[in-house]
Image 1 (cartoon, protein in one colour):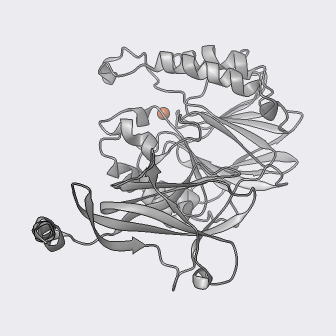
Image 2: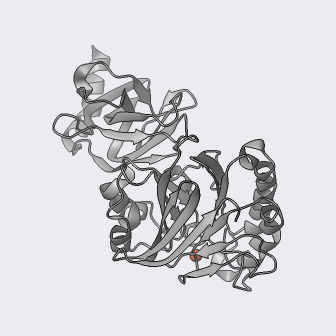
Length: 388
Ligand SMILES: [Fe+2]
């Protein structure tokens, strides 16, 4: 009895001062694969979190008890404000409905936790959120690419306002979405809140790190918000007939530059990445794919800056032998198409997208790339077939 009274007085201030649990950002989809997906969101207060998952369908989400999947780490459920729930064992090319939940943690004394209210996404008046897993057998699909948004969320809105799960399977954020990451909140104010409002709860974002996202006090936390499928910012996956190779070109100046304040170690990082690229491009899964697209922020040509040269020297010898159909880059804030053979040391086409245009790409028996401006007008078209 004494213990209970003690706990009541310990927790009383939390009851009095708690503003109540709220979902503050998200949810958005990461690590979408053929068999798994990760849902990420934040809350204003500490909470434990989970999702409920239902198959796609027109029945009510309340029709049956839905399986729950928890935010866990090393066997424990996670208490915090940033929530990740990974669901595994999914089927390829299959639609699912989901609902997110966070239960506020008001106090943690000894082994006792005191819980507050639960915040959740709504499935009563609103339709539950949905996603569809990737599928290597899908005959045709479309995706978008934007880059160098630099926190200009209005530009992102103009370029991605019509993205829906019905017309777009995935969206690449190809680097420099923010100029400097001083506070993790800037991920949301700079671009991710807009992406969630438009599509990112239902259409997965695949993140490519740019050189600017390596900078700032909060930059080391970026991976928690955009976890690649293999523990790195460089990763690979297959969807439809395309094997996507997402690379991290790192910083653009030499590691010793005064601007990096002794923190940069990107030469070593690109060496490690080179080893990984070698294992991927020699894998049967890579070699048997009808198309191979590389997504990387800094183009491997057009500049004598160190980042460009190091990427070219370390990655190109491997990629030149790997039958790459096209590489999509950003960074320069200027559109440029480098056709095969134009640069002596690059054996595949490289498309550099502008910061105020987007790439609207459809893949079927060929890759149809439209570079469009913020009004949706097509500026350039590139058709790439499997012989390219
Ligand atoms: Fe950049």
